[in-house]
Structure formats: C-alpha cells, structure tokens
Length: 263
Image (cartoon, rainbow, N blue to C red):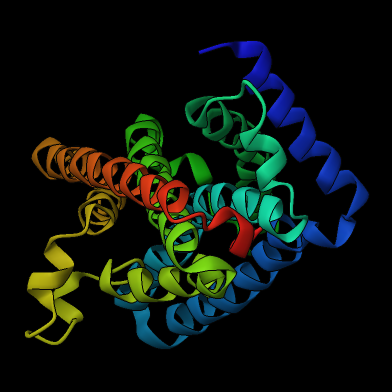
C-alpha cells in the first residue's frame, strides 16, 4: 500500500469538507443536538429516580458519547465514498493507479479527524453542561472505543457494497442503518430491557457487548474482558464479512458495467 496515495485521498476529503462547510453538520451540530437531548433526559431521570435514576443518567450520557464513536466512524467512511458518486468522480478514480485498499485507508484516515471532532464536541458538552467526567471509564475506554471504531467501519463497508450494487438509491442506508443498530445494541440500557424475542438478534452485534462492558465499568466493576473479547471477535468476523461483501459487489460493479449507470 502506497502511503502517498492514502495521504492524497485524505487531503482530498479534507478539501471537500473545507469547500462544503455545511457537511460539518455531522461533526458539530448533530453531536451537540444528541448531547442536549439525551443529557437533558439523563438529568430528568436523575432528579426523578433517586440513586437508580442517577445510574441511568450515567448510562445515557456515556452511551451518547460512545455511540458517536460508531456514528462518526461509519458516516465518515460511507459518505466519503458517496462523495465520489455525488460528484461523478468514481470513473476517474478507477482510471488511476489508486487501489481500493488505498482509497478506503485514505477516507478512513480523514474519518479519524472527523471522529475526533465529533466525539470531542460531545465530550466537551457533557463535561461543561452536565459535569460528566469522560475519564470515569479510565483506561477501559481505549479498547471499548477501538471495538466501536472498527464496528463503525464494518457497517460503512456494507453500505458501500450496497451502493456499488444498487446505486445511490442505497445511500439512505448510510444514515438509516444506524437507527436499527442503536436500539438493538442497548446503547443506553441493558439488553434485558429489550423484548425477549429481539434479544438473540441483539446478542449477535459486537456493539451490544462493547456497551455492556462500558456499563459494567461505570458500575465500578472490573473490566469484563470476556465480554470485551466477544465484542472484539464478533467485530473481527463482521469486518471479514464486510470486506468479502465489498469485494463481491465491486466485482459485480465492474462485470456488469454499473460504472456508467451509477457514476
């Protein structure tokens, strides 16, 4: 992999953002709105529910912080690819020496910058407005964030594969799919709160186990390494499946000449 190509793609994505400041919505306005919404709900629960309400408030605020790791990593990679279809630049990219791996790495690299901006905005908001100490998770925050980051990338690759197969009509998945994953993952509550029929589906998601590990640490327990291990393993399997899916859809994209239809 040639890092000069990766860097060039990352710079190109930065220029797109610079020239289209309205695209900062995902890393500025949206995190602030989420923080105000769920933070205010957390304050209400804490005031009305006593000690149990305070614990629920901590779940809510930590949940919105960690959820933005998944959201920002997924949306940065998915919309980074969609930028090429919106600008009808996909054919030009395929005519260059750039490989698919280099392109994805470049978009993901700039996505990390957007991730820091988005999650940083949430961290500052919860600290200033709700006096929530982001470091309360300690070093446990790092492996949890790593799992959630990789899970977000895996979801984004599935979205890219769907766009390659079905065109820009599938771009709604870039935003919509996360609204399916979020309630199933138990971001703000234990999975036991879900209807019993849905819990087996929830158990298959790596995000479910990552958020469960975060809640255990918030409760003052030791890091549940077994739970985090399950999250890491399922994330790895999801990434492998996502890469295989994108490769298959890319083969179909080239074989059927979808480049002239979707870009």
